[in-house]
Image 1 (tube, rainbow, N blue to C red):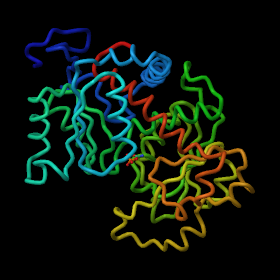
Image 2: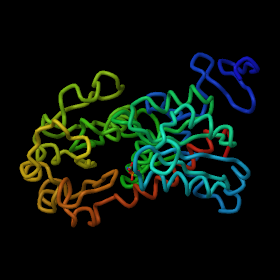
Image 3: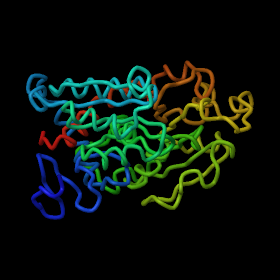
Length: 341
Ligand code: CP
């Protein structure tokens, strides 16, 4: 396709798609938060707001007649459903391929699955995969825009964008003019299984670029000093605080993470002790952070990293986060399909 392409500035156009010349990855792919400039982030949030304000019938014309595939090698409720509903609300046809009910079970490779979806008319693929970097590989192998719906312990960029929109809304900030200082003075404390968390990695790389102070909190088993490649971000430096109560007392936003039991093999963690030291419970919240916004990407494990009454309390933005998934994923889908909204 690149050979057929017509050059457009530093990008190339071919068969209706734009490609980055050096990488062969279709423009509009969303692979990591690092690939996004602050202006890109601002553009996505502005598009999300415009799409939200649009009449449903007008919105449903934007991707009418287009086909989007969801390819999921790991379980998901929020990400899969919101991407699917977002695509449908834009008028696109969707198809879901899951590792549990497809020829992936028979050994078909990621490449062949991607090429099969492309041959069937998919114009973009939303991929969740247990291997870090799989979305990038798929984008190169198919030439289609790929949206990373979570890859291993690496990245979950659409989650970080929806978390950003949630923070802006709950703190009463203007979503339409996001820049490198928008979150200056805002402290976000991310607590829990940071070692295994693609959500933590994406948020820790995105939020400081908008000026936020980010404190990472957890025991050494779940937060090694080198867990995130701490040197790779821009903005205020990431901080580590092992004492949850000291961290919580500084939080404008308390983002709790699930203990990922499925990734804990070989990690010596006493869950009783973890609950004692790190659970966000009502007493701690009232005493240390009575005004903080409580967030969690889900799924939540009530009674482990967060008490059930905290998840349900007025400070909790957990359901708002889920709702923002629809708004933000609509925006990244129109971007992927090269449609101006
Ligand atoms: N936050 C998140 O990725 O949730 P799911 O695993 O349910 O998609």
